[in-house]
Length: 261
Ligand code: ADP
Ligand code: MG
Image 1 (cartoon, rainbow, N blue to C red):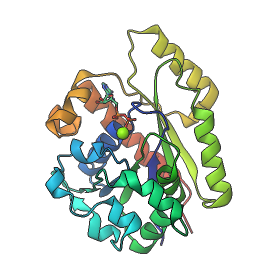
Image 2: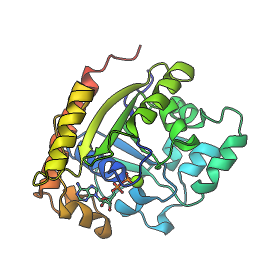
Image 3: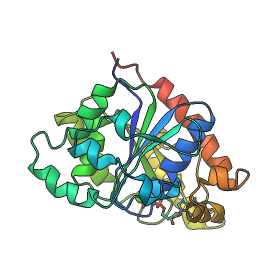
Image 4: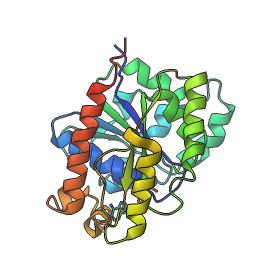
């Protein structure tokens, strides 16, 4: 049975919380007993660093998965968290965009590797901040796209472009693809603007928006420099509570999604 729990975490804007969400959703799912593989698809490798995967531990990377012979099982490695695995990235991946553009099947390289594994683990893909071939590979491989949206003034502006790309992928390469949901991140309840953005987003996007909102929390921003998810760094922080609650909602939504045939 093909894996129907492959979620691309995407937004072409940088700094909106994609990587933070990938790391902490992954950690929360694993802590709740769901085996999860996080694929770091950003040449900056922030998800790999944030999970303590040092440069010397990146022998097998997502580059080998996309452009080499490596299978998912070959390139996924354990993290310090039980049940959480990572496929790390290195800066090699920056040139992959160009190499990919010359490859036959260039939008399906990731999909082909994920199809052949038969793994039933949840797969999260942390996308780079662009709608280039790497993100398209993630969308072609995925069953859902999770969109972190920073609660700030221009948040909704880039969204229509992202939704257009998702629609295009659905119509061409991956009819199964759905928007999994939109997660509001870095919300500041002392700030009227955050509340206004949240109200506008809920009015425009309705149930696509997750009920859980991730607050801006300094412990979340400190955790990566300790090479840990905030769930480990400070399990009782507001950020940790929010990501655990979000993970529960996320799991419910996955179970509600129609079973793949
Ligand atoms: P992206 O992957 O979309 O570029 P990141 O997840 O790397 O975004 O987040 C951008 C920056 O914001 C990082 O420095 C991160 O630590 C910080 N950050 C993310 N979420 C929060 C939060 N809820 N509270 C405080 N800082 C956050
Ligand atoms: Mg990132």
